[in-house]
Image (cartoon, rainbow, N blue to C red; front, side, top):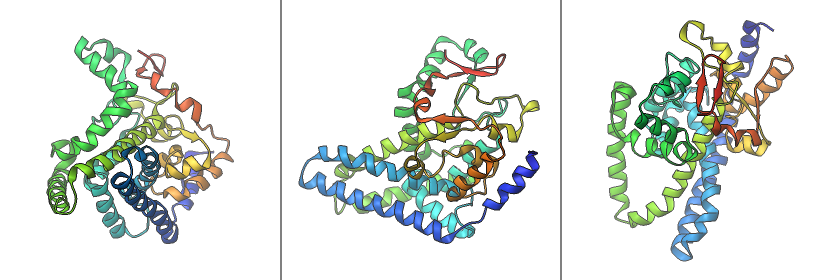
Length: 323
């Protein structure tokens, strides 16, 4: 089937539902609030070790809520752009990344994913085999750490969200830098007022593990969407938008409960084909696309746990390789 016909059909899945959006907000935000209250209750009245139970569950709902934030950045969560922006700013405050900053760099990702000549520092950095070979030993060590399990899922993403998004920079654009300053002031005021009622160290001990795990899971989800052996990378002159979706974006073939908690972001091939489809319509669009018999890069749960071995792009053989 021709690409034009596919895009035309996918536009029929762009319809926004205020009811579905409302239900998603309720069944994501309410459990988080209840679980956070429960976590504080257990911490103050029983033992800190109870958080070993509540933290993973809370983080799972936090990941789901982040996908709503993600949709607001694409203005596809509801048909009301003002509501999307207001909700986006609120959730940006919750997730420590100003809404204009997220919208700026994430939309750049969609515009340049798989383009070797337009790689962005805020995207998942992937070097070619030749580029890595030409690095000095110190930079090779840094890149190896960055691409390692610890670097990708236990350090880098957390550092970017906790620290990187607190520092105004030209890479965020003027609007993004201003929003960082405004958000920082609001954080200071918020925690200053909060300090009158509760010890901030207690707040840190309860909330930090939740955020830390959430950002780690988010990094894993982002990683598997474009990192596999037969991924897609091309130089600018050969780069093609449709190929990024069909060849360079995966379908995470996992149980429905995982799709639910991950906000259907595992249907990433559909998301790259059409940014206007809200997350709650992605499964239906995928089911239609399957009927066309167009090859879709499936990644099973088991395979997704092995993808960290792909660290370099081999331009000659057009595949991801290990060091």
